[in-house]
Length: 428
Ligand code: EPU
Image 1 (spheres, rainbow, N blue to C red):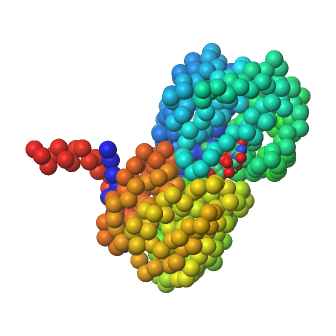
Image 2: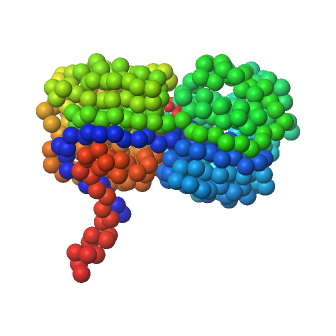
Image 3: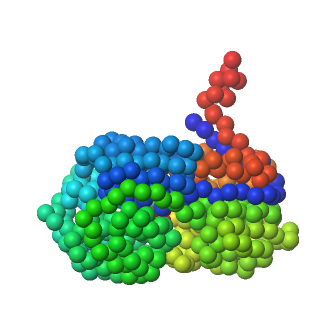
């Protein structure tokens, strides 16, 4: 078992480079299942969710591996299975994309109900609604989703809920369907545009990604090619918040500043300095206490739910009381008990958290409850007085590449410790 140990109080400064977007890369890797030919995919973050997906693709009879630090080569020409291993699939949410990809490729898929972080019910009814409209019979038994279609025929699909996963999954299946599929009320997150760009590079015909109406003209097959994944909006946001939280001065590079607008605007409201460049953002403060603000999470271009825990953490030391409303997930405030353990004053009522700003947090042992909550606790540790120990690192490792090494490079006092090894050494 490992833990992160952080000595709080260091002011972050310097330059840090953002990796490729995890949530885009997982969808693109799943999409590569539909390609007959070799795909070279650059700017892929080396995180555990990606490793799981590479294992799944190899298990299905394809070949997929890192060939350079952040470049993956995938060749699914000879992929020959439509059933994905239940235990592996349960480990990541993105395994839901196997449904759309295998259905597109074989008109048949058998995939375990996807896992991922636990913040309330995570239904897939909109994915299934889309597959059914395209002509698929769907059965769910013993935790497996079984999909079969004689043929996939394009149609109009209106999503009742704006869903990233359903939008991508339907886009995947529709890419190799006959005729035209129109997804209305589609999600508009940057990684949806990225997945559409990837598919178009490989021969698909998708228009409108990034708006709420996506039109997909089915093509008979996809060919190999090269693609580079966009920078990770959420990793970038996490570093921007960490810079503000430590009253630092950090330039965050390899990012797309327009993806950061909702966060940049909120940070500026709090008194944080933001300077935008073509592919970088500088975040700095004048050292004065930050002002309170309110946050409401929304699908893109609104404030991202995946930055809610990090932002709430920053608000724990702002001047005054802030309200944070979670509009995307039912139960994404589990981690606040950990922050309260560090001296924060947060009370939660349903989807709203009231955060009463305090002078400072105090270091303490805490447990990550999911990926972004883990990142939030790291930020809490950086700004706290004293030492914070963070457990359950498997969550953080799912989505942040070289997190503590990057933080150390800009001045954080953070280290990873192997608990068994330490106990063994002490006993000898
Ligand atoms: N929803 C339904 N029915 C569906 C699908 C979704 O009701 O069929 C609801 C969900 O319950 C939720 C809302 O719609 O209330 C949004 O869910 P969405 O489908 O957009 O989420 P997702 O695709 O499962 C992705 C990211 C999440 C991120 C959400 C929202 C990946 C692999 N995951 O999840 O990222 O929170 O979009 O932006 O892309 C993370 O990276 O930490 C993470 C959890």
